[in-house]
Image 1: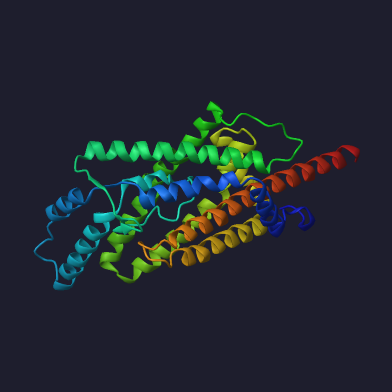
Image 2: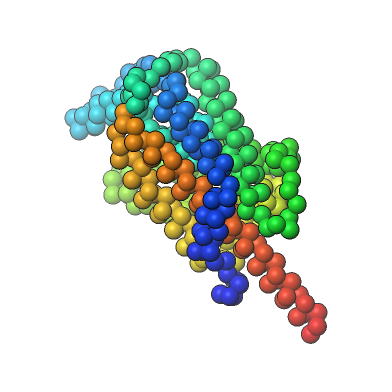
Length: 325
């Protein structure tokens, strides 16, 4: 671990992020445009497919009255959610994407009135829409990260082109790796917890608690992978490994930085979601969310740039002292 004097500075990163965005306000347009589209644009729903799929599922005759009642409540809640949930929400691609306040919102109306709905039932068409929306979201998220990296880079670093095919390929590997991880690790773990929980109900809460801890432990060391793909032109495996080493050497500071960033984002999002779905005050929410989110993004770039600089200087000094000795 780096000595305390060589650790990156948390509040200096947030201050630098604010100063960067005050000089590059165009970065705020990315989340603003996305949320405006999600609020006023057309919505693509799959409620009919969800309803048909749920109705095909039949509980076994041995199911108790409590299980039947719980199932009926779940059916009702699922259909009501997907009645207004739009596939355009996949424009907020995961795990890296443009920050959005409304990506998981299932609005029934907006300040201008009713939405225009497009209903899909064909699984093939649904898959293509999800894939297209995710790829579009990933592309614009890549542009946002590239522009933010240029805005936060030291003045001595030359300005590069906004698009690099090699780094974009590495960028696309992030969601591919995430999907593989979900299917090979997370889903089997959830299924196992559910199966054991059916026999020992107390195990369900305990199992999901430890699964959450495991996911946090797994995600934290690789959080800066997208940043390093952009700033240091690393391939996906190299960025993954470099992020792990960077976080390991700055463990306490990085944990505090990410905790503070998540806390600020969570608390302000609660404020931005106060207006009703048909209130024009949502415009203020969109602007406020965009400003806070992009400041945090810029701060994360300043933080990782500072961390990488300090790490390089520390090891260079170590090597120099070893050579002189």
